[in-house]
Length: 86
Image 1 (cartoon, helix red, strand yellow):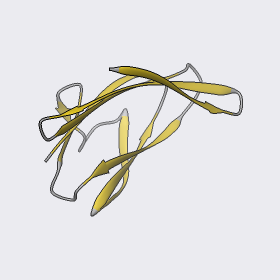
Image 2 (spheres, one colour; image 1 turned 90 degrees about the vertical axis):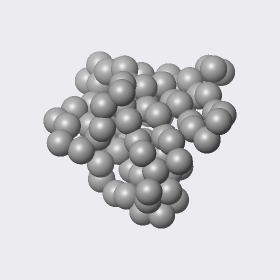
Image 3 (cartoon, one colour; image 1 turned 135 degrees about the horizontal axis):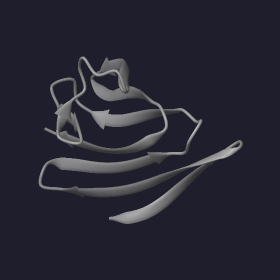
Image 4 (cartoon, helix red, strand yellow; image 1 turned 180 degrees about the vertical axis):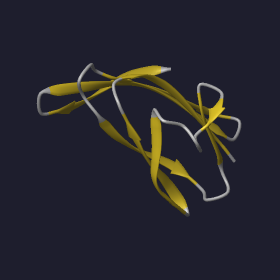
């Protein structure tokens, strides 16, 4: 996985990314007292997990939009590991 940072006013989000074998793994860390909106490249039929759990029905992760080609997920502070599989 390669490290990266996304700078935003008054906060930084840490990202680690790995791709291969029909899947994408993304580790995201959102600082305390911050929120983030994550845009994941995902077909409408793609399976998306966070720390091995489905996104639906979760209180800590909210799916804002799901279209053919992407999923938009709202996050609160914390560490998340997303996996998108075909």
